[in-house]
Image (tube, rainbow, N blue to C red; front, side):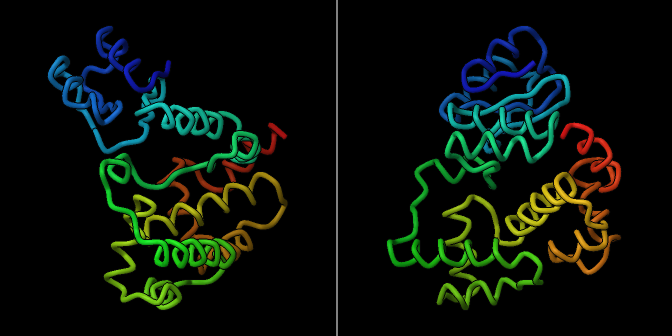
Length: 217
């Protein structure tokens, strides 16, 4: 069962969210917490997945939630295809905080950040320190980290981690590359490191993930 925005209130009223973390549009987070004190409200989250119950924030976060559920049940390849048809990112890093009266970088900074983000995506096989990304953006590390989080809602480190794992999922689903080669292509020094990161995100090892989702294609 899933709901987003004010639809989350219906799940809360039915008692389905008691004791769970939940989110809704940031404008209504306080009201949700006041009406349903048994619900642990997370106003920063775009969506939350508890297995049998999933919750999204505002209208656009409803798309994020749907893409997440597609990814969970049918794999990243299908979710990515649907995201392309919708002209939306398959996964948005960060939470609602980036949309609550957050000042965006100026035009010059924004353009440089866009170029740096594109470069980082094209070079995920490399170990890229934040200092190098900051230098490419012509910023100090501190200024870059602040501008990056303002623009994306995530720290550079968290964003890179998500990008590497997204790429790993895609390669596991769509290629027969050994896990060791997948690890190399997403910037990890060994399959062991990839496995640790992958299990932390997905709850299964890369080989188990591949076995499950290759059957769907």
